[in-house]
View (cartoon, one colour):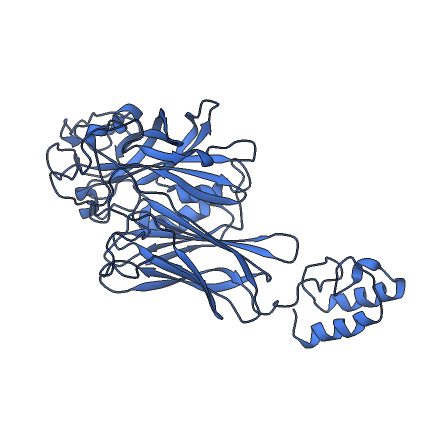
Length: 460
């Protein structure tokens, strides 16, 4: 199942995707993050800083949810941190999972029906875990054992490096290079729950929420504004891409439910750099797909020039079994692709696939503007139905290859028939900015041949 958003409205995104991951009165338990209630800072070791994020869960379903300690029947809580800067959202940190063990019965999201207890979150009820509790190392387990699509994990869960460690052990780790200010940075905190009974009820697509965070002078963070309930952090790219609460209409997100599995959000964005080139940004944000992603391929036509390929992924740490090797970019005649260092689960089960609760970024610069095209995502683990899927996102257009700089009114733009009048006017008045070979150069008779050549080449 795929849901495509190509609107400028953040509200429209949710209406398009509502059938899959909006909740409220859904049959069975339905756990959401009703609030991000604070952040703790634990200092830094070797230039890596450590945080935890408090979360308050709400059960908006029609049945109470299991919160049973000492068993598989309780939620696990993932905590993630992101930075939005220069038109690109990146995940800069992730932590181990908090294993919940008891629930309170609050009224954050609705009137609690008082049908819960310490081992069950009642219908309409909320349960707060503050940042200190979510950052308690002894109660945190690794992500690699959890299937977030089903909410299942072995009990007892693995604790490969012991229960406690130094200040950054298991917590949300952020390299100091990402803790910057003064360049329009917007930080985003995210909480994400996975639970067996929530997934069994088919209510596991609305379990992530985000909130903005403010970086303080001492490297701590303070949360600000309202929690964006049932809205994964990737949507902050759209919501705040042009500044706080200023949406970016060029950010396109396609939400995909992998058959018999979980949800991924695929992002595409094209940015005009103003010099005849465009930056193309893509991301795979895996909310809760166990099958994960191992490759992404963006089509390009012959004649399209590509440079400045880029990759970013958050690091696993503290004994997680996953590799952190960068994906390798490959440019062919028909595509730009990135893939893990091992193509399949059978080859390398610990390869740096896009695991649940992670977002990976991919980018390049091209010399043509965008058109809609089919971006392909390949899955990492085997499973039912499909091994890959296509989504429609902005890709470099073929028709403009070699045509940049042709627009007489706006150098580096595209050539069309309206430029005939501009051509004749420019030639008659010797406008220097009309030079086709070297924009802002000198206009002369050699440009007549260049102008006719551009039209003959089919430049739009």
